[in-house]
Amino acid sequence: MGALRSVSVFGATGSIGESTFDLLVRQGGREAYRTVALTGGRNVARLAEQARALGAELAVTAHDECLDELKGALAGSGIEAAAGPTALAEAADRPADWVMSGIVGAAALVPGFRALAHGATLALANKESLVTAGPLLLDAARTHGARILPVDSEHSAIFQSLLSEDMATVERIIITASGGAFRDWPIERLAGATVAEASCHPNWAMGQRITIDSASMFNKALELIETHEFFGITPDRIEVLLHPESLVHALVGFRDGGMIGHLGAPDMRHAIGYALNWPDRAPLPVARLDLAAVGRLTFAAPDPVRYPALRLARAVMETGGLAGAVFNAAKEVALDAFIAGRIGFLDMAGVVETVLERFAASTTLGAAPRTLDIILATDGEARAVAGEVIGAGRRN
Ligand code: NDP
Image (cartoon, rainbow, N blue to C red; front, side, top):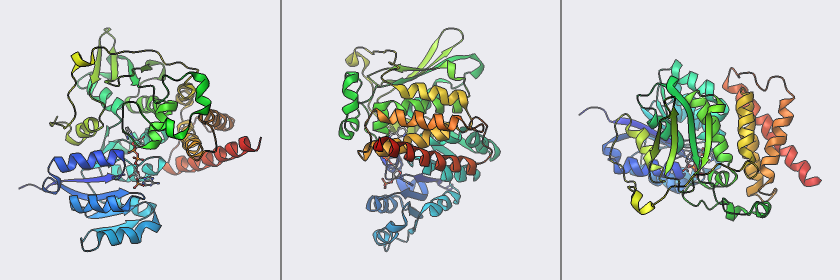
């Protein structure tokens, strides 16, 4: 028997991580895969349960203070336990054929780069990696003969629509958006939207942060930038289309006027399973669409007043360089502040715009960053500025 395929899952306890775990178990678990590392955050009990089920070699929690709990939960299993950001990076240094990048936020950056440096196939769910460090990440993959497979459903859909197509024939790419929790709300109500209301997605079951980002369209803003970075298409040829049913995930328009689109049930196990089995298409446990029962698919242009995040994303793509890192960091801090009840739902876009304006005065904003350290330093600065902007707003 040949060697088992080796896998690591970063962010195993999250929404993407659980779907990945589910597929690994369904596809044979420890009989089919050698699990090198699983990582999580505070949900230590679940991390240990997953590690035991897959017979992982290493389990890492992002938080030093959770190490004792993790060790206790793994006692007698022979599975190594570690904690903290350095341990996360070291987990990525352990070679694995396939690595899921499912940590939320910029914390996924270092493990992603380290996995690519070891030639892994990086299944990229984490949006922030391409938004903050797109060109560097793609360079790292090229330099090390590694591969990045997109897992965000829209980007997986574009990737699949482009199979055996020539990018030179692509006229435009359209990513669809459900419109999020507030798509049917009158604009006047949005200022008073609560965290609980923003955390209910009409179509997808996802982590809380991405669900709120869907309501504000910051999620789609990140995806616009990801599309630009990953597929190397100019911003003016990327469109967003509201599609409340979330069944068409993306469309590619070609120069002959034809379009190829990708349809599927709103279940992340499709995109994850596609990346896990690529270039094969394995049977997946996702619902099959009954289009006769669906009856109709609807589409509309997004209202720019309702969704200022889309305008900000376009400005970020035009600026390039470090603008993505500033945008993402400011968005993360604004989202934290909204979740903590420090700012209102509509204030998030205002905070991000103000932070971008402050950085626009710097001549280096549009310059291509040469190292990940520069990006991480900018990420830190933008977080600090966003904190000041929020603090000043509360004092006024
Ligand atoms: P979740 O919040 O559900 O899970 C995040 C994971 O990261 C958990 O394992 C969490 O651990 C861990 N984590 C949290 N903070 C840190 C940190 N500072 N350092 C290391 N690990 C940390 O997020 P999702 O699964 O929803 O999303 C993950 C990524 O995938 C995001 O970038 C998101 O935008 C993207 N994505 C998600 C989709 C979805 O359907 N959910 C769809 C497309 C993209 P713990 O929970 O144990 O604390």
